[in-house]
Image 1 (cartoon, helix red, strand yellow):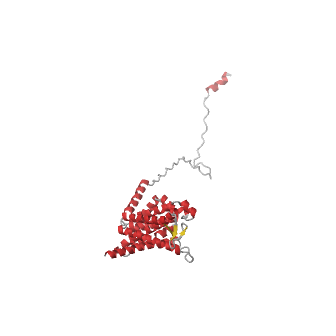
Image 2: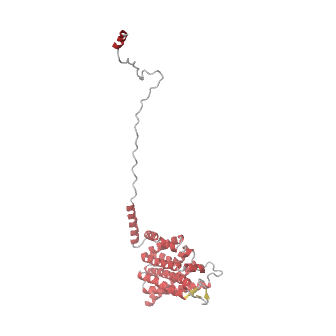
Image 3: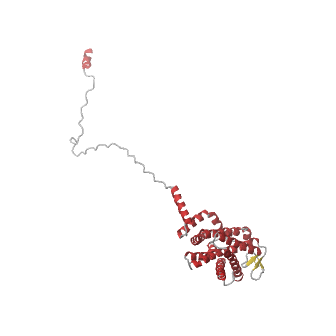
Length: 326
């Protein structure tokens, strides 16, 4: 037994070597066998992030806009572009006030008026129109519920549309255009400014006298017969409304005087012309408006006639005054 184990003890203890397997080189591959392509190491592709987009410089944009608006305000004489830019800035700032007194289409019409006013006469005339709008809107809203109950209030809660804006400013716009294009030369420049101021004095007097008469007039009389008629009747007047209209016209003429649009005698002419024109409007309302054959003669048309008469009368009286002095 021991003798049988001796050869095992003297034999090699390690396992016999494995036979070498020949590598599959292209030369040793079987015919028709394609060689294996070597494996490519997987390289992770990390895409570099795109550079961030440059944010707009809000501060620089705001400064540029501010400078543009400031330049438009200071442009002398005003241009169409400066007038339009200035008007946009004012309308944006005054949006709440505009919405209280005008419809959306009325604001659009007022924008045209404002741009034309600034282009023709500058900031001072613009302030005059702004004063007219503020006072006119305030008296229109005065006792609006009572007026609505009586059926004599302005429609849409007192918010006026484009027809009312055009009817209130047509004569002023004509004067502004005549001034822009220098019709008549320097000799007529003063007359266009006077007509502009007189037209708005006339319209404010008409609006205030009508609205105050509706709200506080104790007795209203038909201007042709002095017969007592209900409030809001076309062609009717009241003591309260008439006095308020004179005060309103005097107020706006005073604003024009302070702003240098008219001198003192011209301011007086604006007040006189406005009262004559308003009396004529009351006559038209009492005799023609709402009558058969004159259905086209609505409030807006009558307003155009009224303010045109006020502007023309003021200009004629100015010419007569100049002729008398010379």
